[in-house]
Length: 277
Length: 277
Image 1 (cartoon, helix red, strand yellow):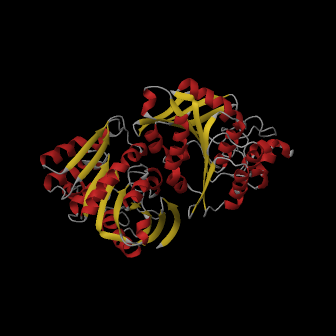
Image 2 (cartoon, each protein chain N blue to C red):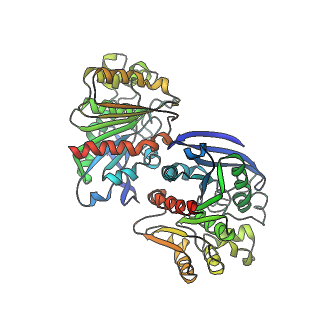
């Protein structure tokens, strides 16, 4: 692992690191905010999974997470959204290939050799973080935006016991019935739709739900509302009697201005769950 | 004036606008955050002047100002740092020409036709803002970073009565004795150094001071400390018995991670002064 940069931030440290990923078979970059409490011992960790086109950097610089993470003594990791490098397959469209890993393990060519983002986020990166930083890996929470909200919800429901709590900003809530989802799941996983089901938050909610609290914020002026389908997840959560809050936020769009506005609430929400464990 | 974008942010609106600038003889872009209180009537205004290489966008997205501006009901304007456009002179160096206007009125070629940033910030943009937005132009404060800290301090001291308060993050504090200053002042204003004096915060402090409170934050690990010369301004402020606070912040560098960490303090500082007027 190599340190790219470390900047003092809110009495803690905002770092950027690269490492060789076995899962993705390429170098991967991630950002990690460590609050000052990490100097004394392991601190809880919140994952922030980003959306289409993002790297580790967007949320690190624009989401305003460090202020609240510092207040609650919580670390935040910002992974990249896909494998990177010249030999990694890509597509001209912004929503497939680099910057659009969709948090799945690709089984189809040309994606399979590198696009193993599920294994990267679920297994490889947690192991690396636990070994190298003062993190209490028994206390993890997960959050994400858009494609990253999809990733947060599907990881949380597929890995019961791993995360105390899950939250999302404008998640892709029902990808198997959306143009943000069908195209990518077909490309990465093939045409057998039974392999898609574990990557759809609405289907997972109907099948198993989540063993902790859920918080979802969705702007009513989001330019991608028709692709996100919060109504499908809302119905599934209510039907499942899931412990969940869905807030339709009047006037907000899909941008980081929306995310930063409600980041304080999300981190406080996760802090409650993390410190209760 | 043309609206480029408007995003809901912390119950207010983060807008980006362009207009034809008479002072700079080109189209100029600025960002303006309006808190929700602006829907009821005029609100106080804080200026945020940015540093070398920045546009209106850097601080708008990375400084985390909106959270605290919303809390105090204050608007924040983020101007660009130089004229822009194909017919505007430039230099290969990052610290001269575009992105490096230094908040002066150039008298020398090739800069004079467009580089009139002093008039733009002191006269033209305030008039435009007062006409087009719900802003109480009798209650203005000013803040800036690096080159923008230089701009904030020199504007505040040269325009007594205009600003209730001035603050800066890692300002270029003594440009007439720094490589961040001598090169640019010579290029824009010519070799007669008597014309430089009104653009040097340390010299202005010795000559006249500021008729309100000053807050300056400076990171001790700032990679540009030798160019910024906070010690010169510190000495001048103490000698002048100026109402001022200079905080040397251990471990912080020159980045937006430093700025965002202390933005809450700066906006609270200005709010105290703005609401006391």
